[in-house]
Image 1: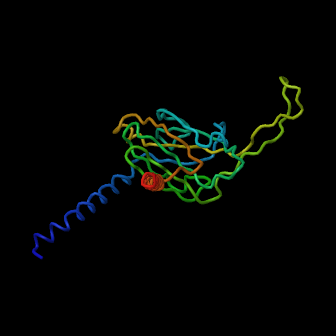
Image 2 (image 1 turned 90 degrees about the horizontal axis):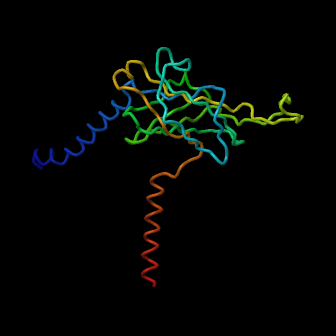
Length: 212
C-alpha cells in the first residue's frame, strides 16, 4: 500500500489520539476546582425519601471552610438513611464553564478513592472505599423548657461536608464560581443500560406488530 494510503487510514486514529491527549491535559491541569468530602455539623438530611438532595445555585466565597486563601462552597449533609454510604457521587452542573476534579486524598474524610468524569454538561465526582459515611442514630435528648416530653429523639452523627474549593487565581482568571447539582447516594441507571433497554423495547414492539 502506498504511503499516502497508509496516512489516509491512520489519520482518524491520530486525530483521536490527539483529542485524548489534549482532553486529558485539560481535565487535569492542576487548577480546576477541587471537590472534597470532610467532616461537618449542621446539616441537610439525606433520607430514604430524599436520597439525592440538590444544592445551589450558590456562588463561592472566601470563608473559614475554604482551603487557605481560596474561594469555596461548603454544604453539610446528614445520612439519615439507616445505611452506610459506601459510595457518594457529587453531580455538578456546568454553570460557569469550570471543570472539577478530586481533591487530594489526604484532604478527604470517610473515603479512600475518588474519580471524576466530565461529559461537558455535568461533572460526576465519585468517592468510594474507606469506611464510608455511617448512618446517623436517633437518641433521646433532654427536654427543654418549651417541651414537657421526657424523651425527644433527634439524629446524631452521620454528618459530612461537601467542599468545592477554587484557588483565588483561578477565580480571578475565570470569574466567579457558581455551582449547583445533586448529592447522589443511590445509583442512577447507566446510559448504556438505558439505551439497551430502549433497543430491546423497540425490537419487542416490532415482533408484536409482525405477529398481529
